[in-house]
Amino acid sequence: MSYAVDFQNVSTTGLESSPVAERLAGLRANEARYFKNKYDHVFTVRPAAEAPEVLDLVTRILAEERDLVITSPALEVTSFEAGGSRMAYVFYESGLAVNVLYGIEQGAKRAVGFKLSEGMEVPEELASRFKFARQKSKLAGEIRGSFFVIKGEY
Picture: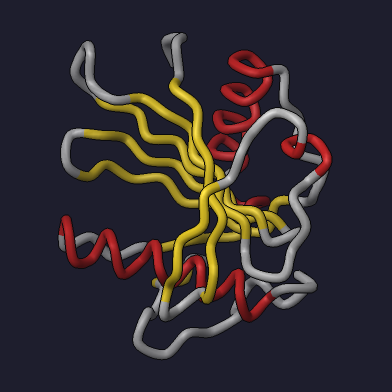
């Protein structure tokens, strides 16, 4: 069942099994606020099991671009178009959020972003390969993030 993320009243709906559920919910709400303010898009997520094609796309890009496999179970996903880009998000039980920005036009920005919820350790599969910058968020506390540019076609 899909869930429109409310960034006014942050809820852990769908994320309850995460050890950092409240901070992950804040991170999800932070993303929802960004897309509502910038593109007037309602950020709607659904359980990963209901949209395996979104999880498969993100998993494929991580594997083919950087030989990465995220070991934490995926809880929720979303995909949509906004501002000339296709977006895909996966929220993992560990507190990790992975997003794929894929510009539709040839030569447009294409990247994968990683955001870590406050209170979680950097996942082993990312620790030695990425440096994380810190950002403060009223909804999520401290977010640590990193990214890489997508080179292939998907």
